[in-house]
Image (cartoon, rainbow, N blue to C red; front, side, top):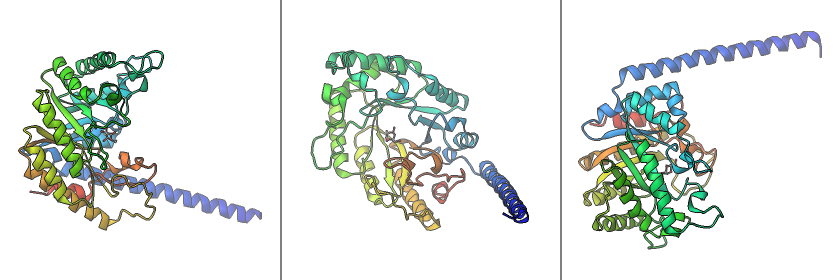
Length: 374
Ligand code: GLA
């Protein structure tokens, strides 16, 4: 190539790179300014709702080390739940010893910032190591042996994390199969395979015997689906009638932007009759229906979609406020869309925008729709 053309190209590339650099620098500081403006001028969401219920969020170990997220968490939420760090799979090593570091860091963050903690979760058929259910030869444990292990596990975790105020003792033990009337999840659960449904009550009794001051919750998803709701109510009534020490029901609340508002109302109406505390434990509003595995390549999160979601959040919060006498807390499953689990589940790489803050940690219309709801 001619030298002059080469020099011209080099110069052009340099100019483009420098322009991009300064553009980014500039837009970065603009975003920072807007971030700080909102931080200083908005009231915290948990303060806005302090007469109705506690407002919380899920956090990961990375979140509590992210400067902007840390500021948002302290500003808007008064309770946190570890997104994964307190699940058996995160706490247990293969040799049976514990890895406490990340969960400890989350507990310390809560203490330093005067936040409550929801402990999530002691028992779950997922995210529990397979060896937990087996002897050294790989055979399934007998029920009694598994219960011993369960007791030791609950005792270790609850004794270490005494500052937790509410524990999800059992997560997702009700069948999600809409074609069957079976109440309990019997497929894919080692707990059920070894103990039948009895493990649920055993876990609650153990947890209560270890620390009788903690609030003990059963937590599940799809509770706005009438069939799952009926099954869950049957299970809860059976636990209550046996005198099992259960304090509350956790409605995960992984909802769909276009759900009918009547569904949540019906769920809250029915749970309110049980004389249990109700908490919304994992709230987010997805643009895709649960179970929809399509990639939705053409989906664009534009202002119209943002507005649709804001209306949906408004309607969810109107309903929650209606039942605020029975609901003690509402926890979002994360702060910013950028880090939502829905960006990699159920399919890797499908962008979703289910939360109150956008990828730049700025409040979305959804934030304002519930912030201004009075
Ligand atoms: C369920 C669990 C949570 C979390 C979400 C996905 O709702 O209860 O702990 O794993 O799935 O992030």
